[in-house]
Image (tube, rainbow, N blue to C red; front, side, top):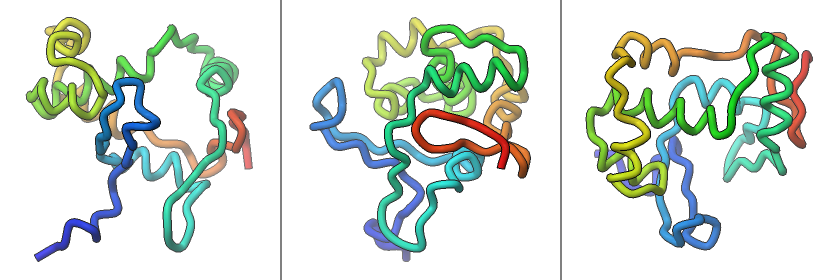
Length: 139
């Protein structure tokens, strides 16, 4: 049997850092593990510095020509996570939102399970990985 303190595939967000004031745990998907490999340590908590999403969005635009809107990554996560889980209460808890807000924003009749699986499979190629302090580049 696995002990609770041995689970290492969660982001633990303390209430002091959360806009809602409530602590929560967010599961780390396989593609997030790949994206965050740059900051992996042999043991202990990972910290990637002050990664600014504006820098990530600018890098995505430069690399792909795709311009992301405000909170696009958050909304993408919520929509696709809901399609996989089919549990709006769990998605709301992971995202620090109310069930009503999650219903309004993330229940998407046009998203399919296949698209959700593809979204969570997006991973960087070996030569393009995130770089600290909100920059992204080629290694």
